[in-house]
Length: 211
Image (tube, rainbow, N blue to C red; front, side):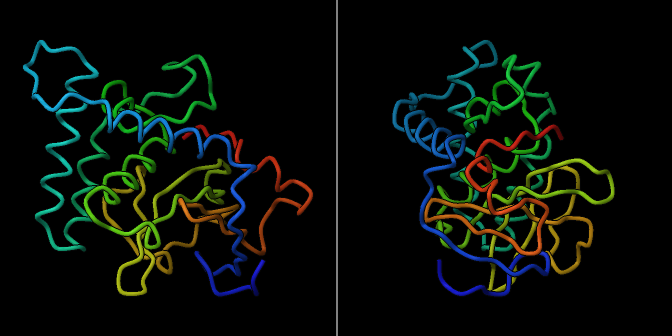
């Protein structure tokens, strides 16, 4: 790993390109790519099948994002996707650790990591480079729960897209989150200080989230 660098939420972070442990993330990336490639191009009506409608809604949404300046695009992605209904994974999938593709999320609702994944994928598909995007798994010191948010770097500033908060805020303005790790397609960042011991790194990709 390279030397530690200044990181999210005031932490120090260490980068690794080895994503082997992160099977949930790898799985949802592969399934999202499959969905995007297989989705029908035609729009659907109000009585159309849910997966087809989700695909049409997603394509229309991404097309809209592409027309917007970057900061407005980030705010729009956060606002629109925060309107999707919250449904715990154990209710949707009978699996509390299921991570949803954007189409699954639009069709069925989801929980914190699903909001974050959809925002990440929408912004990436709209033209934001992967290097400017992350999904961050954090501990909420206010509630005591674990949580996930999307991160977008704009002009060197880390902006936080959170399903629990209506507006987009820079990470330096948020004091409640302590990140365990953050991740994108290029690799992942280990955050220090944090609440997991180095021997637990292998199970980080399986983190259980409930919010």
